[in-house]
Amino acid sequence: MRIGESLWFTWEGDEYQPAQVGSHIYYTNGHVDLEKDVVKGALASLIQRDGIAFSLGNSYFMVESATVSHLAAGYADGDYHPTIADLDGLSVRHEIELEGLFDITIVEVSE
Image 1 (cartoon, helix red, strand yellow):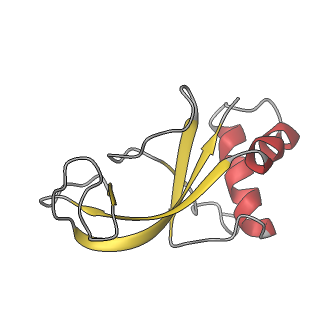
Image 2: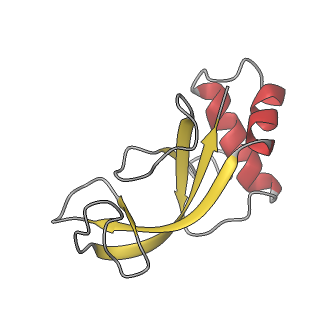
């Protein structure tokens, strides 16, 4: 496994509102700097492996033009999928108190 290969995951959580319809959402734990080569390269590689981009160069272009959000997330009632949290630790839309809050970086890429 290459450095950073397991850094990014497809977002399957709750309450994130994409800026664009049909975009692809990825996330990683913590607030990371997308300008770091290993961070950017890991995401670009995943985008290509997922079949979203036709080449690694195209993947890098997608990352460069992506929307990046540094947010917090937590879990509702032991749910496996993370839920976006507001500043008070509540879910954004349903105002449910979340447990195990952690920082995340979400990247939204469009084809």
